[in-house]
Length: 71
Image (tube, rainbow, N blue to C red; front, top):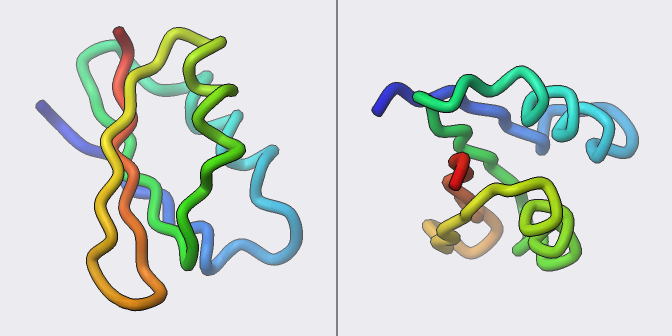
């Protein structure tokens, strides 16, 4: 499955709007890999409400990857 990557560690300011924009543009055939400096637990309820599944992995002390895909 093709992947898009969004590293919100590089976003200046609040990244939520940028994340939502990426989700709205995400084709059903692709996965969005969100990279963050912490586990974005508040995002999980939003993903669930919008019909997305996610899988989270901590890859370094301050680096989390969240794979997001349509249900």
